[in-house]
Image 1 (cartoon, rainbow, N blue to C red):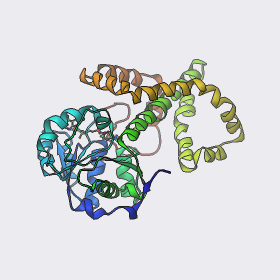
Image 2 (tube, rainbow, N blue to C red):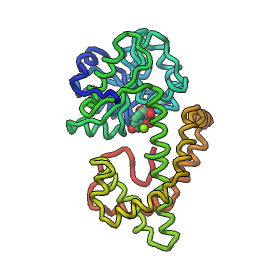
Image 3 (tube, helix red, strand yellow):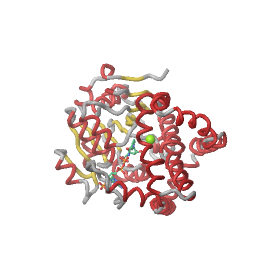
Image 4 (tube, helix red, strand yellow):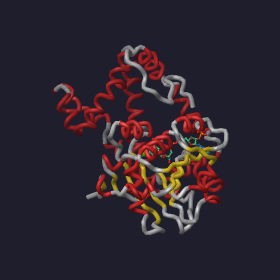
Length: 341
Ligand code: NDP
Ligand code: MG
């Protein structure tokens, strides 16, 4: 049985007694920085000079400094820049400025698991990885709830790494939902697998094939969009609330019977075999190498694949339909249809 920590298992005063440097102010960075601040923690956000996020962070009432400067102040340094850039940011700006006893925190184990970052033995190495996108981590904290997180300690130099990790998890709201104990290896491998095989890769491809199948058979793209994409959220909400059983309870008997007889035809044994191949590539480092090599090469493959995805006909259909929805847009960094980055 996995060990899960809740509010009473963590002492928030521990993190309140430290200066926390949050490096990066993106999806996770803004959420961690603001949640910590609202939990009474002394936070400094570390950004590169001229960062477009600088003003945003200051406007939110946060202290902001250049990465090197923020790191030098931090008793705890949480690295929240994209995984592919962590290695160089660490080597150039973090390692040379890190207090010898500072604790290093991550929200994903990638760089430690695959050896791209190798901190000195004097540092605690901890992970607090919310199991949700940053904007949800912030939103749900403000609502008095929390996104569950997983916590791990790779190196316990101080003897206090676990209480410190749990204290941090509490301050971002995670122990309200549950902080699950894991290792850097388990987190990294399961996280990559989940997003590749099921959550992102699997679902995206499933939606695209569904849309193609219907439109190639002559059905209207708008109908196909609602059937295979829009409704996905409603179905997933039910699964999230009460498992697959609740979803099947809510849908019609016709839909439920179709689920049983056709689901295994679409997602057959060969899909599971492919999933095992994907997992192998994650475990033996093949995926990590391919990703980092491409990133070092300017992300050429990555950009080509992104452009190909954005050009899929379902995107244009969806953009038109969503523009007509009668409800207002949630405040977001993402501008629908422009893929502004
Ligand atoms: P983002 O892409 O949102 O991070 C962007 C931030 O990183 C920006 O503030 C950006 O600076 C800064 N940044 C990028 N490159 C550099 C650089 N070279 N030097 C200094 N700052 C830089 O990252 P995420 O929040 O998505 O991911 C952060 C970590 O959290 C990763 O380890 C990821 O795996 C993990 N994670 C992410 C989740 C998510 O929801 N996205 C979920 C769980 C874990 P600027 O403002 O100047 O552009
Ligand atoms: Mg993930």
